[in-house]
Length: 358
Ligand code: MG
Image (cartoon, rainbow, N blue to C red):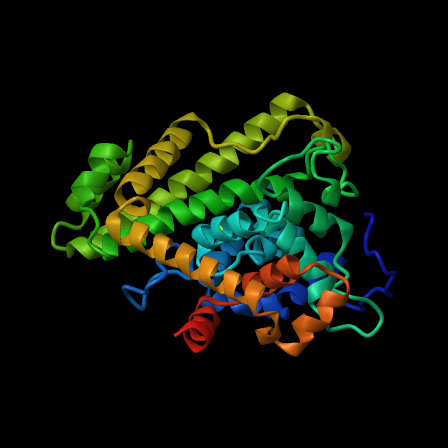
């Protein structure tokens, strides 16, 4: 283990990954996930996921996977809890809008680099060092959870072994995230009345069989209860498919160590029938949830709002809070404005926008 940038004495009863997990849970950026959009910004219902409850679902599913595959559960859990902490307000629409603003200054924004900067410097909780002083392994997993990069491709990530794949614990997060949000968005979309069970069955392989089984097993149950019975089995089908597919790939690769895993293509995958269900589900959600008029409207509203507040601060930097203005001694204005907006929750963003722009 490469461990921490600033050496620390071991803890009497928590291992290094448990400590990293606890540092993430106690971070301000983690608490802010509570008021950040997952998919539905205007909360159509109190029951929908936000980014915090999504994160908890990813952590729960990935611990199950890690245990079933004989991987390090604590390492996996720390990565799952950190996987979305770099998201700005208003989900992907917010990320795109901030990136667009930054491009006008020859710069860029993405949530992965933002997450790294949060844990490396923005969180100030320790007297001896900036940031959370997480282990190299967790930082590497954070920057590589959803994609690999070649040497020189992302200079900011040069210390994180470019060209090599991360350990399996980090590789798992990407697909676990996908299984968690596909099934959760199906749940929230159904609750929002965007489609029926019959429509899912017509579009998603295996869904119809599960629905028929539940109908004959529980003929008197209300449809919304049967929906949950099917959803539970759908999660099971996808998670089991991920365990099976990954196990097969690891066996076939002959990899015996993390060093060997690093040199191979990614080994995490869903086994064929489950992969087909997952793909169809993703496509269905794109058509019936993400690109429907209410969500497109929300995205446009988020993009316009972020552009307006960004431009306002660029014109009127005196309106930035004092602790952000101090950063202008070392950083260009657009970077300070971007970092400040990226850290906002949806609610704080709305309040700030109303206060400054009416
Ligand atoms: Mg996620």
